[in-house]
Length: 184
Image (tube, rainbow, N blue to C red):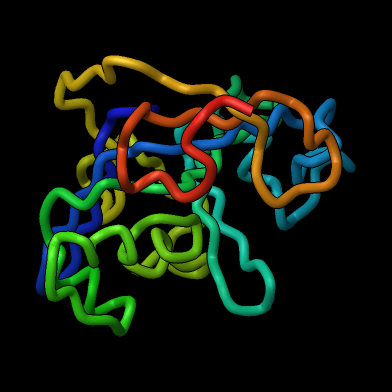
């Protein structure tokens, strides 16, 4: 997924950002995964076919955007942690309720899973279960051929279970990465 582009289309804008940081959650065998306790109504998307959005609400104020990634019936997901804005910056800033005055302000838009979801207007009600391979959708992922020169692997951020697993991946040197930028 690293290097691919996430798109959001709505009535007034088209937003796009390059995926620069993700974390893997390995389903029922991963104690940090939402699927660890088995299939529920809330996490059912993770057990479905690959390439479908799984959106959840966290800390009472942020949505997080994931994509199912394993064959139908086997849970697994990828959490999107950061994007590099490509276009639609004004719409992202408006969705976040912030102003972008300089290039140095851009990471505030999509650096971190909550910021990313807010900038793209991602909510559980609107987006959970969408096929992100369909360009007929208003939320999709596309490959423009970009390949990162170097990918860094680190431990995941902000979890207490299985915290030592090296399942966070980021594009080396990218300023939009949300957490530590070197291997841990």
